[in-house]
Image (tube, rainbow, N blue to C red; front, side, top):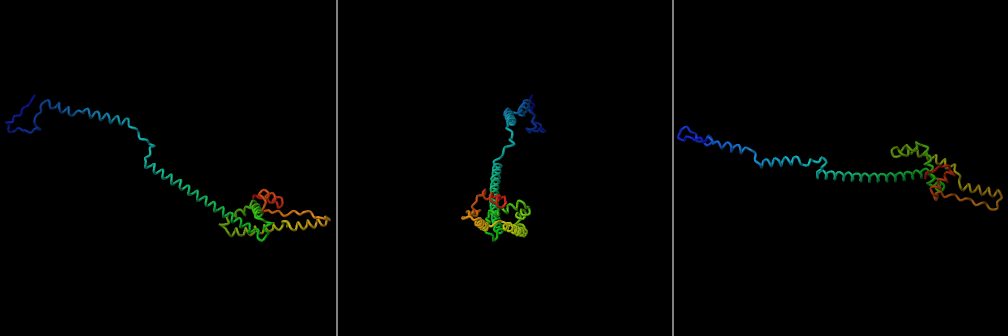
Length: 222
């Protein structure tokens, strides 16, 4: 049904907005308000992508994180290598100092005694035997740098003990003379050949250990 406007009326409002609409206009408005097929398809695609999207991997690491961890590992191993080198160098220095200090102790204990009769091996074996039975000596030696005065007193006492020990050892030259005299007294025409003094510096470690044990009662660890 169509409503006609009386345009002759002075009170008539001719605005299009106020114009009555035909009955078919409401159907067009409802059609426009309904979702279009394109909109439905987009919604379905979005829903499908949401449901089928691959979940985030909690263990996935970004490239930046990989680079950071690689750099940390490189620095860690570099630091480990440096620490190992420092430790090796420190150990070498400590070993060199130990050797120098021990050789100095051997010379100090021997003093003016004949090095041929009291070689380094013999003095070292005597020191080792004393240290195994004297914890105070071990302590003084281990702390010789921290307490030089105490170590000096211990070393002086050790020197006296070694010289006392050395004074009780037989003199090979006097032993040969006594044997020669004894042979002459027995009326031997030719004295038995004297055993030459043993050159301790030429003995192997095993030979030296046996010699010091047999002759001096020292169990050497050389």
